[in-house]
Image 1 (cartoon, rainbow, N blue to C red):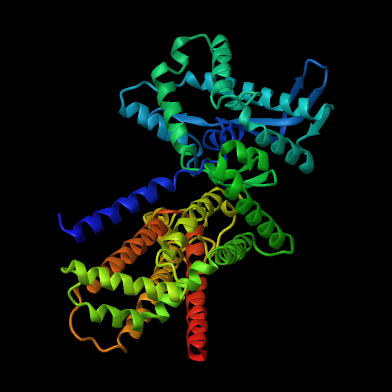
Image 2 (image 1 turned 120 degrees about the horizontal axis):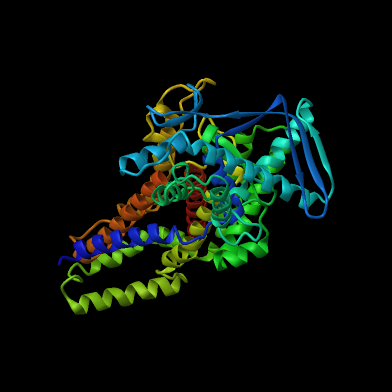
Length: 515
């Protein structure tokens, strides 16, 4: 196998390894967070509205009561012909309907008219358990009148805050533990087997529901609040605040870097939002500041290696002279050894480590993984939009969704156009930042007259070019596949790298002139 082929295959392996490692940081989503997400995809077929004559009364074992008056129960209808639930033609339970469609396609009897009784009873049991948990946490009586706007708001807040009860038990030990318990209780009430979902349908239901939430990991936040856009009617979901201790339980890098970076994003985003900045703009500014902070710390940590790289570029004319002295170094072992000795003397004289660029990469790689973990996991970035683009979505999924190319009802630029513009900016900036050192080295090498071809030098230069191209391709591909927030980070980071390269080269050139 040719050396170039080996090098290319090695680069491809490195890219694949980076993609695998980019999934190493664990999700910060707790079982309770996932329970609330699941509820957003299947909130049941019951709505609770004001203006009715019904009442809801819940009493705990300690005697505390949760009383709600003037309630109207509204239930979704079932179209037996289309096999779907709907409140109106423009308000369908799309995710539940998709599960029913999947079951029907698999030849599994999913829902019939009688099953509605099972679903109504299930919703009532979920409401009872949710309000009971609200009472336990408050430890005081609650009396609400839904005709009062503030009371209705509190009722809805309690209902959604404790919605995880539909799936997650009080001990949070399993995402589906409570659902199984409620299902068992409801089957004792709705005893007709024809009205109960079959075990095959339940298996499909659970599989599809898990697939709905599997793509979400934006649960890193320091403040319990409503975030994101999930499921039916693109609902916001309460996400639990996470502590640093919780992060250490998730893993070493999660505690060491991911949580601190996420904490910074939170504080900066909340700070800007607190002074009236739009949520989307606040999220964008938080990425900008975090990028500058992280890159500044990286610059301090690798200043010696970066200065060495700048010296390497400045010494390129002398390196070229040495290479020209040994044109047969690629085939002659004697010339190869003499050239290596002269190069080593040059590096030693100028206090340069030729492997410094690798040291920089070794330091940067885990930081990159942790920054990705923080940006993709940040709950603050899952709320709000920048030019109609949600920063928690990947550029790929935005571009490949046809509806994103149309101007939204709220007006402005289609999100796909924003995503494409961001991708092009990121790719262009990364290309310049990575190729700029090579361009500068090449420009300096041209000042030295060549005595002839030097296969050894050409081979080394070609390897470095291929390595740079592969790394660039990896970053561009990952920028296309990861969350849009990462595209912003890479764009700003590339601008910082360009500035850093120009400044370091300028300092090195000035120092050489003075010497």
